[in-house]
Each structure stands twice: as C-alpha cells, then as structure tokens.
Amino acid sequence: MLCMPRDIVARYVEQLAQGGLVERVPGGLVVPAAVFTRPEMLDGNNELYARVMSMVTALRGVGFSFGEPA
Image (cartoon, rainbow, N blue to C red; front, side, top):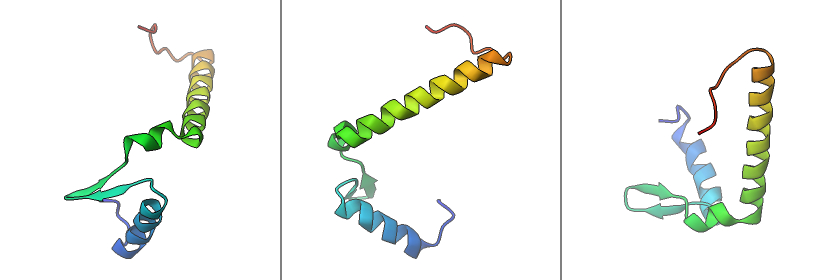
C-alpha cells in the first residue's frame, strides 16, 4: 500500500516498534494512545497547528476563503 519495497518498510517498522511508537497486534500495527501524549509529540502537534494557521492566514491574505470558524 505504501508503494515501497517490503524490506525497507519492515526495517522502519522495526525501528518504530523498538522505540515504542507502534505495537504489533493481530492483523497489523497500532500506535498506543500514550504516544500521542509524549512531550515531543505534543510539541510537534503545536508546531504543526501554528504552521497550518500561518498558511491559512497567508491564503486568506491572497483571497482564499475558508468560511467562518464554527
């Protein structure tokens, strides 16, 4: 599904599993809920939010309309 060689995907998945970022379960992989509350993940989410808001502001500045927030 990723259009990548299976051996490369397996290598990255193994690194993620060793780091506790994913867990193997019957039928695939899951990201444990605790991963999303790690300080580095929260920092990343905050940075992403700030960048998206900056992009939306810039797009509005050149005429794009996203409607009003709910």
